[in-house]
Amino acid sequence: MTLRAMALSATALAAGLSLAGPASAKTEIQFWHAFTGRLAELLDAQVAAFNAGSADYTVVATPKGNYSEALNAGIAAFRAGEQPDILQVFEVGTATMMAAKGAVKPVYEVMEEAGLPFEPGNYLSAVTGYYSDTEGNMLSLPYNSSTPVMYVNLDLLKKAGIEPTVDLSTWDKVSTVVDQLKAGGVDCAFTTSWQSWIQLESFSAYHNVPFSTEENGFAGLGTELTFNQPLQVKHIEMLGQWAKDGKFVYGGRRSEAGASFRSGQCALYTESSAGYAGVKKEAQFGFEIRPLPYDATAEGAPYNTIIGGASLWVMQGKDADHYKGVGQFLNFLSSPEIQAQWHQDTGYLPITTAAYELSKEQGFYDRNPGTDVAIKQMTGKAPTPNSKGVRLGSFDQVRAVIDEELEAVWSGDKTAQAALDSAVERGNQLLRRFEQANR
Image 1: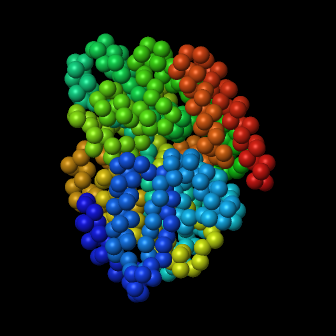
Image 2: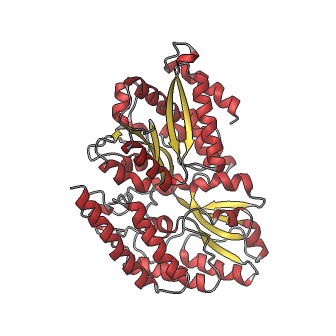
Image 3: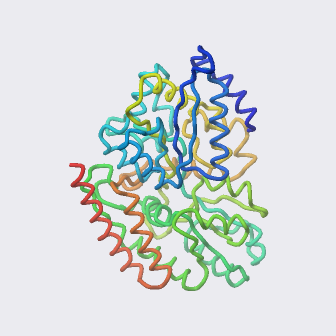
């Protein structure tokens, strides 16, 4: 959708907005985010569309670095009394935001006070559950929610003499194909982004094994990490062997490996469903989106993958007029038209059932096979205590520990068992500090 088209859509939606008052009287709503590149462009288009349809409010979207940097900037700004109205926080910051007493104004309160329709039941349950309290109250808006999938370079498969329709459903089958790709002259058979999220957190959920105790942190701050069990060790050991053999090329802790896939160097790439925006824009080769592979030896697998991406948190310390504008902006972002287009452009999940149904009615999934993989993975089975997500305190720091230990496996400096044992021990120390600080 073009910026002009989005603006026209916003104007049509503005019937529910308050349009009284001169343009000069507009209240500014400060929105800090962590998007760059194509995602930032699409976000800016949404903001421009909202601003074009509102006579009372102007949203100012400001990038604040990567997800970790944006979270830290928001915390520092709140302490200085200079917080934005809205802060985008990645999913691993959820427990931190929930524990930040006095810093957050829950979204359900914002919408209620603004007199705007807000029904959590209209949102995908697999998404809303992660961002809700134990009473089911939605604390933040799950604006950009994703889940891991596998991207496949069909041209490199053909180069190695592999049928494009080859079965990649299980890790054993992927292993066979990786061998064939290497033998066929493909220098980068496999790569991954967000290694902790995809290869440990989602891997654990997908196989219904705990990542940590206390329902992966949902049931209490006393959670302890448990991802050093046989199935997880087996998986990391396999990837470590691939790295040693030159079949797995490690690109970095976040999404750095995406550049290697989008440029046509790597054949198989596990990444967020939101990687679709960049792949769609840059890939000069045929590609497909496949489900995340699973280990067929695990009983009942696959279950469901878990949520990634980020949500929008409303910060305390603003006046009623600001919160009314925030509510209108969040209402706009949740509208079926805007959400459906966002989903179709980016690969993020449609956060509402209405947006999903609209995408189906528009024929998007028929025209773009594989773009519904993420939704099916998240909703194919009812989540279990092990598969509904991971919500830990100091999770960003825990991930940094995991990343460091995994890198030791890829470099051949540690065995998978030793690395995961160390990550569990070090991560638990961080969890105990967080628990002590938030009793």
